[in-house]
Image 1 (cartoon, rainbow, N blue to C red):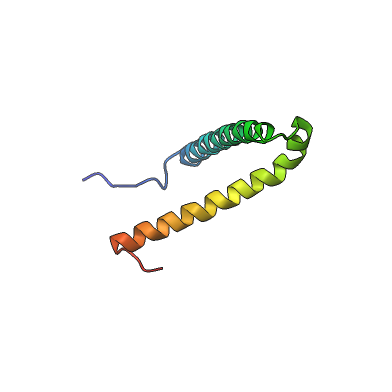
Image 2: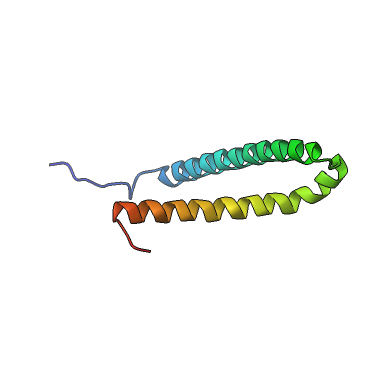
Amino acid sequence: MPSRQGSVGRPGLAEEKKERDAKLRRYQEEKAKAEERLARDSSRRSWKASGGTEAAFDQAWPSMWEEILKRRTIDADGQARQEMARSGVSRI
């Protein structure tokens, strides 16, 4: 009967994991940049339609983006809690 060694002695396993992790990190960074670009473009249109200037928007954007991220995080957490409560999985 052949012995089952698992992944302990497998050469290159650490390198494969590093490559997968790096690929995932790149994907997440690209997705985050795209999300910010979309939010920025949409917010800029709204800002200018309300009478704001491009220069004022550019100055305000960093704090606006941080606030958008905070809201998204809080909203996602609230939705997750509601879904868990509805499913009976957990009572947080």
